[in-house]
Image (cartoon, rainbow, N blue to C red):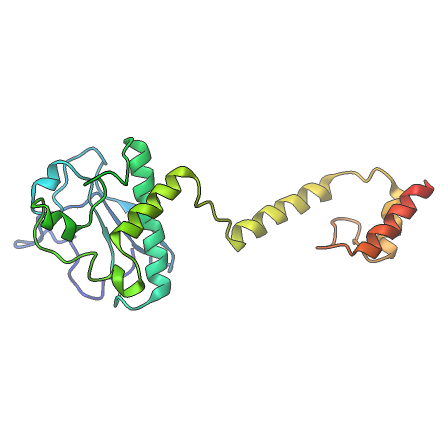
Amino acid sequence: MGRNTGGNHWDQLRPGGRQVCVHAFVGRFADGGVGTVQTLPWNMRGWHCAGSANNTHIGFEICEDGLCDPAYFQAVYREAAELTAYLCKEYRLDPLADGVVICHQEGYRRGLASNHADVLHWFPRHGRTMDDFRADVARMLEGEDEEVTYEQWKGYMDRYREELAREKPIMPELMADAKTMGLTDGTRPRDFVTREEAAVMARAAARK
């Protein structure tokens, strides 16, 4: 993970170190990307909430920044939601059922955890609540949250163009016409073809 500038990390084995362990951390890696690091088997009892939820719930930490960076918040929020959706699917849990997906503060209010504010000290700053989070997890499970990023779309298009480049032209003469019109360099198609250019190619094909 990225460097902890607060110096309050949990990896402290010296006397007086933290006697706690969550199942995973969500945060920024050293290379700047956001992801998840699993630190315990999901089916092992954790030591994450100082309450009885240790016996019943999987616990993970969302690593905080200054709490004011919307880009970082959106990234870790989505990562946390995807992790929660994965766990709900793995263990056949309904994220909208009472008490299934809770934050530390909600655990405290239920008498299941110690009195920590997270994540209710952070989510509202960015217009999100735990009800929003549970709803987003449910949508991910239902497949309604399938987003294709620009990077994914670009990867799909690059692979498609590579496949086209490997195909042998059916009509060499038509390919020659297309090269003359600047539609291709002979190895891969241009990013787009105008309606007029397509009509010219169609007429060329009709002549063959």
